[in-house]
Image 1 (cartoon, rainbow, N blue to C red):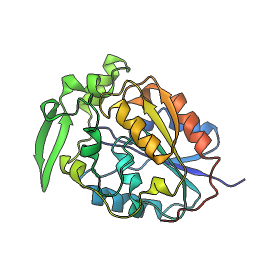
Image 2: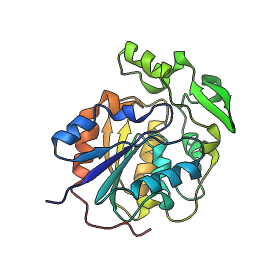
Image 3: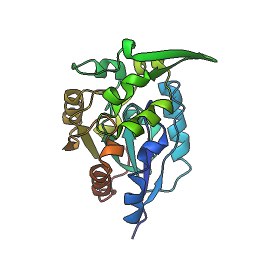
Image 4: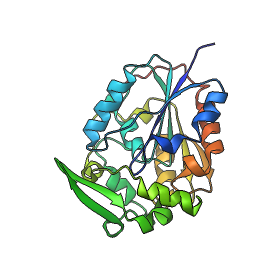
Length: 239
């Protein structure tokens, strides 16, 4: 049997540990799992980083993205020919010429507005954090309060400029089979935006009553979708 590797890509405000409850379920199913860390500085930089990372892995690959990572996965230059399927977990499914910020504002409901962010300087730019008291409402309302406080303290910040950047070429979800986990209690990426993007992409949709932190709050659901996606690994990426 062909060994499939599942690549789990985190988004903004959390790091690869957001997948810590999904990983053991996939590993118990016999899949190799790896979760890289994105720089979260520019969209182009994250695209280039993921591409270089994927070039080090043998195929076939299933690549999943949470939140902002969906924008990265959507870019044709981010993937290699070893990628066979994509899974968007409460994630952007961005098209050429679009921005994540534009998609996030397409429908009401997001708490990721400027008033709920703290922006700090770093060498070369700025990075954004959710205000600690807003982390649970915006990201992790269905997690234990103590866990939400830890996540708020250990945020992986992003450069907000990345949300206004786009890419050229045919979006990957137009040529690869895709799945989408839609979180119906999401206050980061509005649920209606997730539904709209998944419908446009023709993704196989699973809806779950969960916050934006769905990989942590509903790992069984996310893992089940990922396992399903590994069964469709025949068509190579044509981008």
